[in-house]
Image (cartoon, rainbow, N blue to C red):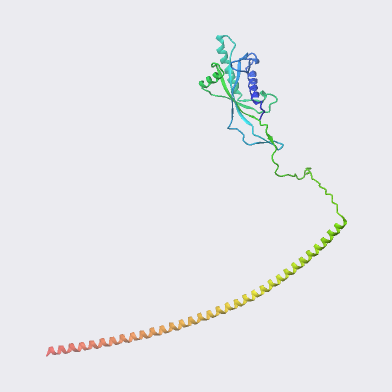
Length: 323
């Protein structure tokens, strides 16, 4: 988290780290490194050129921040800062290109070894933590477009992304109080409002109030006695109704028992009648069997007679043949 000065603080931090790491070799003086425009470099050999700022939507904080005193602060703005670093040597023409390449190589080495800007390179009054810095792999066409944006022809340079960094919001509001809390065992005191009323009543009004209260109390007692008597009468009627219902239920049970006994008697009679019918059927079956036996005997006797008559007729026929 930081104030609105975070952009200038980051530029100053990059300048400080390059001044420390690039002097006295390959640059003899720290004053030759600084933030400038590519067209107006002055005496700077290593120029730091901020060229773009974008909002970082990936790490954007949407929820408010709860401060220690209970207030709420709007979420900060998360930003990405883009820098171009170029070299313009003051050496002679035959040595200029080699010196610029040597300085660019040292710049790349510094930020490779320090992928975050340490807090000690930031201004003393800043309250931000370490900030990441990384090289951006751009194509040559994109690099040329950036240089033409400044109105210059392309020069040997490197491009870096710093951030995301945050800019605090100044919108701070008190939360709505929902419940008043009381901490047990603490010296917390809740202020109380004491309201005093001044009344002026005469003696006659006081007497009237007492007499009215007495009459009201008597009426209340009488109404309570009436209610009590009504409740007792209701209880007595309920008891009588319960007794009558019990007697009715006893009579019903006796009648039901008598009916069940009659039914059992009828069933026993039906069983006896069934037994008698069974005996009669058995006797009839025995008689039929006897009759069938007699008929069979008669048939046998008839068969014997027919056989005897046939034998006699055969004997007679044999005798006639013999004669």
